[in-house]
Length: 166
Image 1 (cartoon, rainbow, N blue to C red):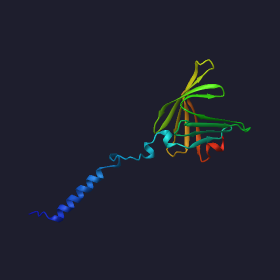
Image 2 (image 1 turned 30 degrees about the vertical axis):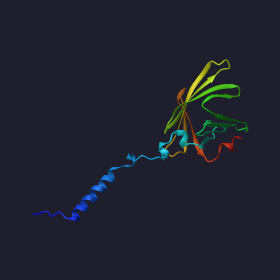
Image 3 (image 1 turned 45 degrees about the horizontal axis):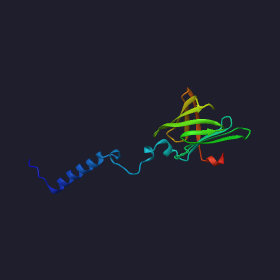
Image 4 (image 1 turned 135 degrees about the vertical axis):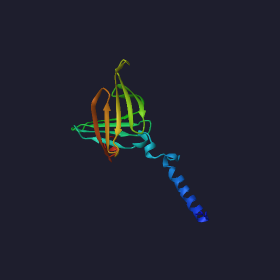
């Protein structure tokens, strides 16, 4: 039996080869100038987002991809509130000095180290806080290193920080 190679057969073979080649090139192989949200670090991904909890008053955390990257508020049931805007480095709050360091800012979490200084400048106490958000982007969990079994959860809110603090 003789095999006849025709133009039509060559075209079919070439088409199949080309399709197999393109199929083998996945999106992981393509380099993009526009990273997706999966390529963003925690502060980029959650820039402008807030998460609140209403246990024992209202408490919330807001993230910004800027110098003052973390905002916190607590509003007690009697209406009194504390509002903080925090930056990396030294923060002075109500006469107390805190040194805040970003240890990790990756796609999955934001890890902070806080050193609380007493009034004579000696390090008094330090702790780490790790912020993570679930895969849906709706629940923030904060874990504390001084008590590994202790964590707090907050729910994403559409209310801005200015709704609670001026």
